[in-house]
Image 1 (tube, helix red, strand yellow):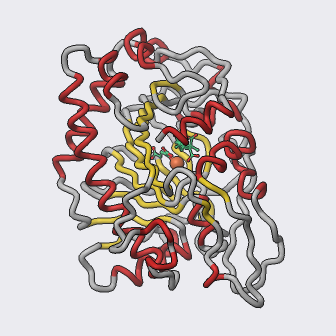
Image 2 (cartoon, helix red, strand yellow):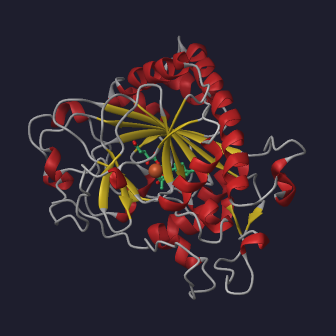
Length: 371
Ligand SMILES: C=C1C[C@]23C[C@@]1(O)CC[C@H]2[C@@]12CCC[C@@](C)(C(=O)O1)[C@H]2[C@@H]3C(=O)O
Ligand SMILES: O=C(O)CCC(=O)C(=O)O
Ligand SMILES: [Fe+2]
């Protein structure tokens, strides 16, 4: 969407490091990639059921309740039986492999410029950290045609088709999840101006973000993707069969989100945290890497239309429930995030008084390190 691109033009993200050819770094971890400080959060006890990200079967009649519960307690869940054809995952993974396997000079033909959203490069959050992340990414906003033409002069149409089909399926699923998540908050589609008459959420904005985490010679000292929250309403993530994603669970520590064949990870983003007046946490997550396997993931970052303002829904505000955030559009919020990163939510916060009704997790801290 042009308006999201505008947000980046106003807040360019300059990454001060050159791009890396991970193939040439397979023997020793360069110092620039060594995150030496100790982990600031312990690992959760993996034997406890309390420490397992909920897995929800969308065909389960109880799914709406389970989704509400998972959003409130975790801000994340895994979804199975969601109706997205498995072939879309194999196709998008094939596209990921094809893209990230291209020689660096070829990928750089589609490099993301500092004031743009789309293109190949390092994770946009890299500028907030002194060390480099062991990953590369590719973001698509609008049509990927011009970028794919650079990457694959012969085969661009085939890959554009894969992206089109994948995005269409994600858009439909995201709208369904919005209806369920809002209903779990007691919010009807009539309460959300841009929902449309049948809750189709047609005007939604979305970006498709592909991540590649190559195998790493010293995984314990490296970081695939540093701890962050997404600025979205919802993010729907497909991961290949290599683990690495972790979420921070209140009072527990880092919890792994193991890949489920054909499953999708759904997490709450900052804008839904705002809309829920702090009831649903925007989950902090990160990605660790491993010595043997390349990991891919594809995130569908889903937000409201261009200039629509998101604010705490009035049904969730009242006596004893102060309005915690001012209203903000995704466009404006991306600018705030580009400046303040994990302190962006604090930057739009208007009330700090939280009473017992809220399960607000304050994660406005960007000092996450691995040891
Ligand atoms: C629309 C967007 C959300 C995002 C920034 C972006 O322009 C495209 C990439 C997205 C992503 C993916 C990795 C984590 C994240 C924080 C980042 O740096 O880039 C998110 C951004 C976000 O949700 O704010
Ligand atoms: O690779 C993953 O599992 C997570 C990626 C992610 O957090 C993102 O793209 O925002
Ligand atoms: Fe993320």
